[in-house]
Each structure stands twice: as C-alpha cells, then as structure tokens.
Image (cartoon, rainbow, N blue to C red; front, side):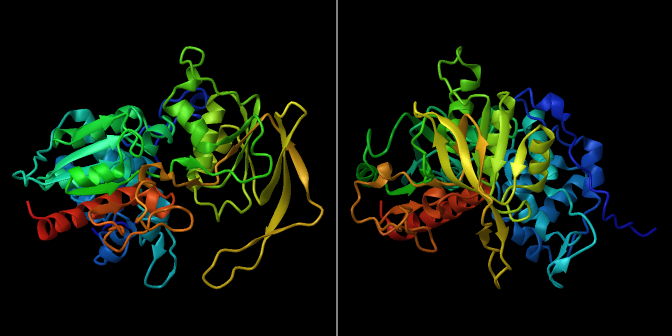
Length: 475
C-alpha cells in the first residue's frame, strides 16, 4: 500500500491553556509524546534534494532527514548523535529557533524551492522533533561519549559564554585544545540565560547543555569583565588564539523621551527578570517598576519575549510595530500565543515620542499610523506615515525592543582592531579579525541575530581557529 502523503495534518505541540500559562513562568509548550513524534516523523518525504531544502535552510546544517529517519527506526540515541554532528544543543535550538523561516520554511510540503512558490501543505514540525530528541537524551540520562582527542598543547581563550562562545569552545575541546572561557556574568548562556524567558527556555535545559561543554574539560572563569579585570591584549599574549564572542549587550534606545523614568531597553527588563529574578521582588532584592500598563516597541523575538514577561508580571501589555505581522521577524505562532494571553498588538504603528509628566515619569507613547508602500524588487515594503493619524497610547512604561548594539569594553584596548561604523567587529570569511590570533563571531560581529546563527558562527570559528593553530602556530 502506497504511503499516504499528509499535507495538512501537522502535529502541533500541546501547550498550556492561555489563562493558566499567563500566570506562570513555567515552560508552556509540553513537547511531543513518543506517539506524536513518530506520527509527525512519518510526514517527512525524505527528499532526495534535502541538502538544498531543509538542510540548507538550517544555519548550522543539521541533517534533518537523517535524524528523522532514526526516529522512525526507533533509534532515538542515534537521532541524537546525528543532530550532534552539527548542533551541540538540540534541546535549545528545538525551542528557540525560528524554524518557520529556516528548515521548515524550506520543507517541500510547505514551499517548493524548485518552482519557487508555496506548496499546498504544512511543513514537518522539525523544531518539535529536534526538541523531542534533545529532551529524550536529557531526561533519560543517556550519556553520549564525546571525549576529545589527544591534547594538542594549544591553549585558546574564549571571551563570552553565550551561544557563539559555547559552540566554539565545544568544537575546539573535541579537537583536543585546552579552552578557557571568560564570562562577565555569574552564569553561562549569554542571551539564552539573561534574555529568553523561562517560559520559552527553562534554565535547567541550558544548564544541562552547558554541562556537556564542561565535561569536555573546558574551564569557566565567571565574573571576569574582559577589558576591565583582564585586558584582551593580555589574553592574546597568554593564549595561542582568542575568540571574541561578547555579544551585543547594550540595549538600543534612540526615541525622543527615552531618558524618562519608566523608559527601558528590552535587554534591561529581560536581564532583571531572567537573571536577577526581579519577578520575585522584594525577596530577590532587584526591583522592576513597570507600573500597570507597558508598551513594547518592536516586532521581533525580543519584543515577544518582553510581552511574555510583562504579561506574567500581571501588567497590561501593548506591542507597537511599524510593519505588519507578515513582515515581522518573530514566529507567527508566538504572536498567536501572546495575543491569546491578552497582549494587544498595534500593527503599522510608528512610535514618535515617549511622553513624560513634570516629575519626569512616563505617561504615554505618541505614535502615528503607517501604510506599506509597494514592495521594491528584492526589498521589503517601506512604511509610510499616514498624515493626521497621530495618537497617544497612555502607559506607565515603555520597553524598547528595537535591537542591541555592541559593547566595546572588551576590545577598546586594541587600537588596531578594525570595526564597522556601528561598533561591530570586522572579520573575514574565516571569522579572523585584523589582529593576528584574534577571531570573532556572534552578535559582536552580526549586530544581533538568532541563537542558531551564533551557534553556527561559533562552530565555524572553532574550525578556523583549529586550522590557524595547526598550520600557523608552532609550539
């Protein structure tokens, strides 16, 4: 009997009802059961040109049909090992990757890359399957032998324990190099730990993934602010190579009135809640006064993460974005989730000014409605203001989720380091900077992107550093 091609009956992850999940920071997506995972895996067509579809769509190059086939064979450990060939942190990527614009967006059930048009079905739920496999290994206690090869004698310093730094350290350690990670904060994970809410990415998942790096012999030095407690130039003298992965840790403001009390950058809000537990104030000792009504400015993952956070703090939440839902960078299902929880999203709305009272406190956000121009060839439609549509949204706080910018503290003592105008670090195709022995990747290079792109750059940097050490450095 021929296999039935199932286009529309995609298995969605079971999730908490909105009225329950909005009251807790617990993870609200429960993940697949074994039966659901097997049923979803059967939807994969195992395309002969998968290397040009889902595999190519994955920034880190996971063999998607390879690990799905292992699931169907009942070999979950084999599926886990298959993912690890490319991605060291499947439990994380399965939760936070924008699969709809990457692997799933290239699935033939959804999009025919040959004909260049939308197909008639829904893509295989690759993200949920990857999460299922990663969680199988984590929950079952199965250990995969990832011992590194014979020590090479080379020493590498990694600056920053975010996704790029962790991925680079992971791959270098597996190649036998001694790796030390210097991190300013008290915990590893970078934006995964201090930015993404627990409701989307539980901290025990991050800790378990980081443990794999530690098990390879990588040493962590927390509380080390490179550029202050130790200079980058000093690390270049002590180590054979250095990988700079400090992220983009400064919130971007830039709206009139952003100096007012109650105006926050997204990164400050997320850090206070995720890392400093301000949601537990006064027990935590870290306050966060957002008032009763907050307006979040932005249309990406960070804006959604802020909405997830403010909703769970019991705050009336509004999101302002100057484009449409279809042109936003956040996942469509996540817009559904926050709106189900009570967030009001104002599409095609451009903020003009944060308004304050005589005491210098935020009392509103002045905005103007927008329309999108006709799309220029190869570009996004341009938002154009609608004359006479100015209005004010009353609020107690405004959270600006409009991007981050580089923090040059770590590398300001290297005058020879070439930077772009926005302060990000210039690198070549091998992630080498203008300073010999110094490599860079992640948000400090790309200005702020997805976790999986940072992981991919960390992996690529590890490969480049290995080549540099073995071909250009003599012990």
